[in-house]
Length: 328
Image 1: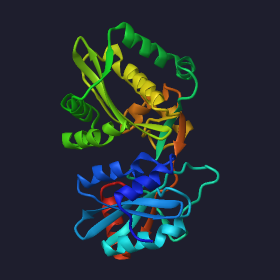
Image 2: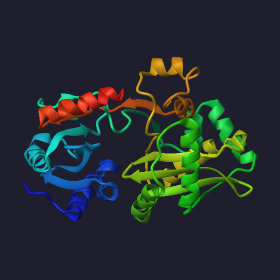
Image 3: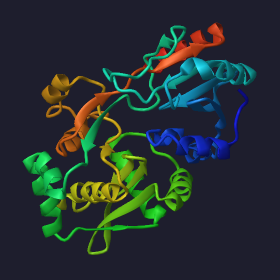
């Protein structure tokens, strides 16, 4: 079972329309541009895109985001192990594309350990895009529908754009305002260059009288769409541009044949805790939960993450470093 080329991987992915965007070779190319190495393995109906990079001096991480593709983990595990060990990885982290409680999907072999540290947000809201637009609007909370219409009445205009500079400036404003980290402009530009020609990405800009108010980058693969990146200005917030922006992103996703829209990240808490706390909290992802919940999505949490340890001493050092940072 040798490692396969990106072209061979694309052929494999084409036979698996359920595969996650983070397992596509375009996503691998994006990560390669920013310091990761990428490897592909496949055996029969199962395969994985593996990302590898140094995270601390002497410690390399191997990572399978939202994979493997297929259910036979054991079939590819020997080759995965070989690659990880040849690249001197302390451990392999797997964040599978499996929801908690989902029937008919396999869990990893027993020699993985449960990890408290996720790279991707483990909990999210998934919006059902089936039905006509009136059905979609009917699933939303009344206030969200009102704000979509309010943005239209107040002259907010949504259109596709190629202006990554404006998009990044809005991301930076939001990062400063809400105290979260943002990628460099080159990261978003490279993502757009890789996915937009494939019809798997669109960049939308909300404007009022030619003033940029908000923007988002939405992705699609198979039947699923994801809202990965977005930002907004500090002006004209009373015009509710973000609500209309999301609505147009959902309409685009439907035009691409998607039946699900993933809001990609809410606080990692159960529904009862979220509903009890969102009105009082705005830290971390709590502020965006208030916004996202209004669109009527269902709460999901992914299985895992799971770690496969190759060098126990370095893995213990990594876990100690996590605890010092307050991540675990």
